[in-house]
Amino acid sequence: MKINVEKCAQILREKDNILILTHAHPDGDTLGCGFALCRALLKLGKKAGVICADDIPGKYDYLYSNMDVFEFEEEYVVAVDVATENLLGSLSDRYGGRIDMCIDHHGTNTEYADKLLLNADAAAACEIILKVIKALGVQIDRDIANCLYTGITTDTGCFRYASATSNTYRAAAELIDLGADNGTINRVMFETKTKTYAALERLAIEGMEFFCDDRVCVITITQDMYARTGSNEQETEAIAPLTRQTEGVEIGLTIREKEDGSCKCSVRTFDSVDAARLASSFGGGGHKQAAACRFDCDVRQAKELLVAKCKELLQ
Image (cartoon, rainbow, N blue to C red; front, side, top):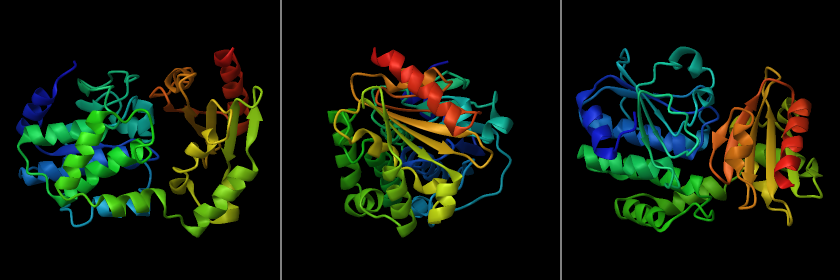
């Protein structure tokens, strides 16, 4: 059942022992949502926590520093920035079919939760969480503001993407007024690279492949590349935008090999192709210009399937 912000806040005020789920291969928006909401619930005197199927990259440590941690048996489960249950990764084995609420901004949301707060016009799910926290009556402090600003700036590519609306800018300005350290966050998210990531990025660019008259760019990240560079999947978040930076490319595909041999693809497009439509063909979802999907096959097979679909969509 779809709900509005006020109903969402009312339910959260009535519940306790709230577990917040973020999607696998976490980004700044799902983590910003999770820890901002968790901090707000803690300020209301509730027990709450955030979990993710994958390790959280070190650059996001500040989102949960100095935050109280409680042991509790979850009574209410909330997913944030998660369009489909399979994006939860291994968490879907335990929580699939029993998620009480989802707060999301993906138009492809499959309405898997009992209650859904959805605004597909929001550039980042953190825009929605900001409204929820205000409806809860919680005073937004610097830590919460940093969490929410992180989600907004990362999901808009530091406000470069067309998804950023005037409402997005107003939300970001409000968070800066509330203490968000926008300068530091933007530097950490967009200008700071580890040496291992720099080595991985070099291999990724060297291995770029082009298809469909150079309208499709594919980057493949393998386990061997992680081993050669000392990098890991946590550091691949900045790879996907590289695929559509080459002139003439309309679809960018970043295929990442998992340890078990399966893989995940991040899709980036421009207005000519709907990334969510492409991803949904393989059980994924997302936004018009940014989406993702998973494959049980290896990277070679996944690439063949994806390129064939791209050819179909570009005709």
